[in-house]
Image (cartoon, rainbow, N blue to C red; front, side, top):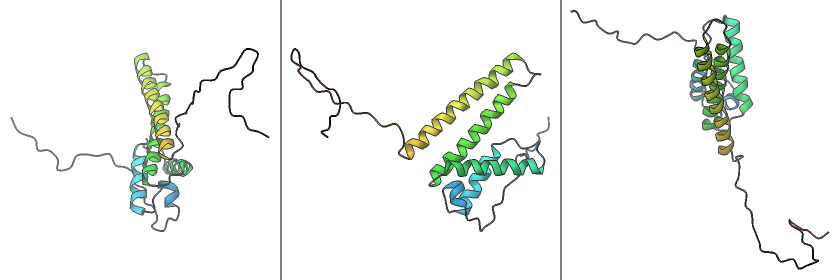
Length: 167
């Protein structure tokens, strides 16, 4: 029995790396960071989550542009928000791909249901990320404070419940 030698590097699928021009002035709009390196890495991580293998060059450019527009639309204010923006875009794309796969005619019912289940989980993750981003930005749900006071109203009297201001 002969032993096989393992390759020095694992085989990886070739990917298209987006190289941002060094003088990109809108880095903060995309990633919330003024760091070229951070923005470049973040965009490439997000793009690696998209299935672009069957697209021609124009289609790939369109997907890259759309993803960056989506990240700008989230308006990240710092690096953490930039990471959340990238996750939101990736999560959206993955859920939409699961929905697309669920609609393929040639697959069985079990595979369709699995794709719908994964799409459902991704959609809930998307909603959780939106909530987390809102909480991080200070726009999350705040606790309501209710003050209950004991009020006596005599027979024939009237009471008003709520804030009353004299005009």
